[in-house]
Length: 213
Image 1: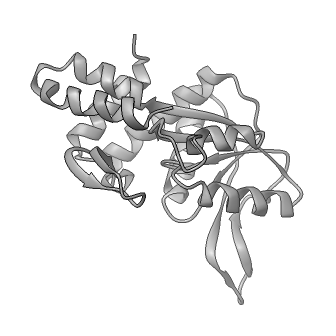
Image 2: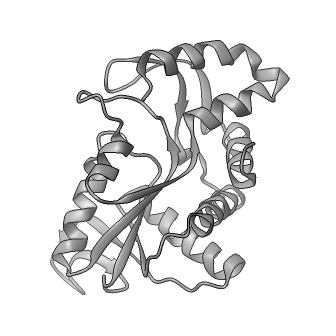
């Protein structure tokens, strides 16, 4: 059975066309039957509901953390919105920080903005593909003297990379926990419950069988 936050997230993603079906060429060169773009959540209503899904999944995970970190660029509004959702819906007031792509040489300077990084830090991003954004975040957090403990993402594609692991598995192997609002398996289950999207089921199942972990 799908978790309530997973159901709401996938319903929202379809409504805002953040989740699309068809034929999409990925950076890996693979032809994917679906595509996810968190940038489509670009109004107050959608960002609020997305953040609620993240917050619910984080609370249910039981992971201990002291602070949120949003990698530039998509992670910045995500971390801020999740911090709001945690405070409003779960009574947990968590500081957050984010980075700039380029260091600022005036004003407060540096690449980090927001609360000073300290304690156990949870990284909030949309997806983990090559893991580049997560690895850069880990380096920034450790350089600031804090400890990266986990990452929260919207969608885990559960897809093998060049070394036969998924990007999420690689992050877990590096010592971080990963919380995903939804996985490809959830997406397949969700489609099975929706009569109008059943035609997309078989391509997703075939893709999962061919490239999945």
